[in-house]
Image 1 (cartoon, helix red, strand yellow):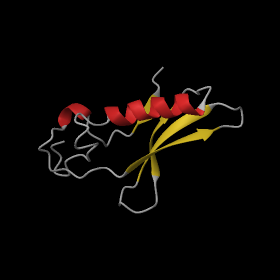
Image 2 (tube, rainbow, N blue to C red):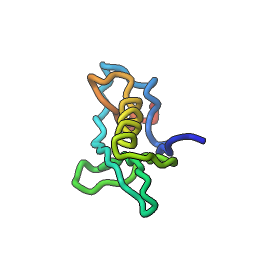
Image 3 (cartoon, helix red, strand yellow):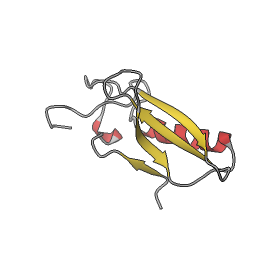
Length: 97
């Protein structure tokens, strides 16, 4: 089972390089604790760079601790970018991405 769900509108990290002029995604990583006590990470995105965020990706498995969920979510967030110097980028709006 995959540890996350991802929005298919985003590019694969392999499609991006440091010279890419696409827009930096406005993303946030958070951790929620469910009623059963397990922790889940969520990656949220503001599609219009406002303070309103929508879910971009989420863990499908629970973690025993906040720290474990945070670390797992951070690994996914880092994986959204081929180059950490430029961060995760939006898909090319011309349809080439």
